[in-house]
Length: 138
Image 1 (cartoon, rainbow, N blue to C red):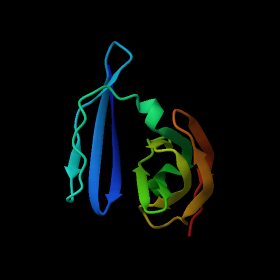
Image 2: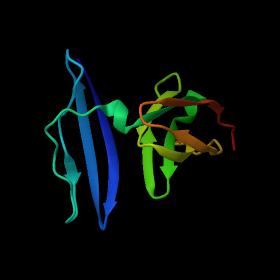
Image 3: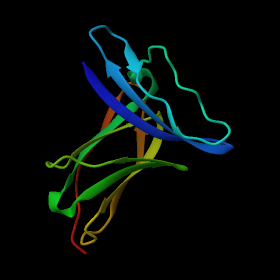
């Protein structure tokens, strides 16, 4: 059994911050574990039926170095922003809805220049790699 958490902001007049923790059991279905975190008047209710995560999202993968830059990775599409923290080797995975994204890389230490990769196209159920991005010192 495994679990993943997906967070997104849905704009429907008012903002709803939604978190979906999905767990895969021994069969082929994925079951949501939680629903809306913070809502406006147009919030979506929790869903209690199986969800095929691969059919509703794709993945952006890659590596950002150096690790001592304490990098943050963001996928931006219009007014939606998805954030990932790379592991200690600099590897990251972002699960995002289908679309075209600009991927930005910034340093929490502030001693490295920001970098970006534009026009990253994500399809549902597919993974796209942006390769290795190396941040340079300011």
